Length: 330
Image: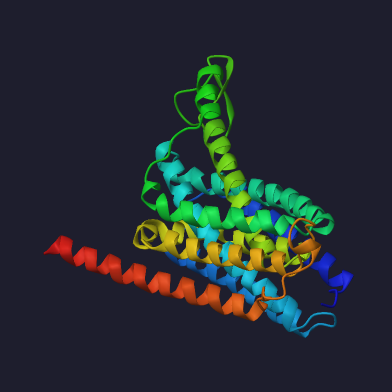
């Protein structure tokens, strides 16, 4: 694959950072609960922006079908995982009774934490892959394990339990009884105290960490280009805040989302293992030679597979939800 022009990569990252900072500024100055129309327009804008970016990459010198297809496959996968992430965000917001007008700031902070964590993991992942190609065995096995766990635990999403560190924070930190906007510290009777928002931010951050552990190996199974990996993550996270308010109760209707994501992650995991077998360098396997019978899965096959699985999952979820609603009304 040809390398994308440096000016294109730098310009893209600068533009995306600027867009995120502008979004953060808007949230900081005008905290509110966005209407369905406002949320839909912003989600549509960010989705259209990602599509335009993929098409531009198809046309520029140094680009082409391969990087464009890898971006779209990575973006769709990361976007789907981000929607799953929203389930947990909804539970956390409800669990800690975050005021509706402050939820935008919480989500924005969560997105920024996710971008930083994923950036670190992407750099580490790229460095490890560069030195040790056999790491694909580990990535593949981990994704297959995650896929199985998603299916087995798919009915546990409705509960959120504080982890040990959060429970410890509750006991150690001097906390106020109520929120003070999105502030993490406030003054009560002349004393500086933490607000419950510090616990919310930590819960969101730890959730982002867990999701990054799943999503980064998944996208490295589709492309090894750190630029494509990170831009796919940025585009997937942009608009997530508005998507949270747009979907609202509709998230409950995606009853088969975890199964669809499990199939996608499992498929990418198998692809990684096959690629690791094809380029095998482990001396105790086949004498350090690649297995000729292990096929290389083209990126277009991965893209079609991901889109087909998610489309079937969405349609099946909506049909099942409608069936359950009719039974409830009967």
